[in-house]
Image (tube, rainbow, N blue to C red):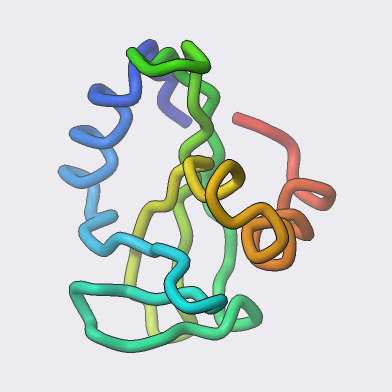
Length: 102
């Protein structure tokens, strides 16, 4: 699995490798704006998890690469842990407890 030094590098490479969708938290649920649909967290498989530098207040970010049941690839960052901590934990937390970090 690739190792990235910055969030920009991670996003650019992951997009080039097919992670073209973005998963966000909207109205207490996981949503994909590119597909215009809500997605159940149970439909996701965590494929990648990277810890990278970011030029923001924390100095670092986590980025996750997911696959849906119908093989759509997408990314999500830990930004939502700050803005919607309960929803982020419900969606991403279980994967972090199960999977080793890249």
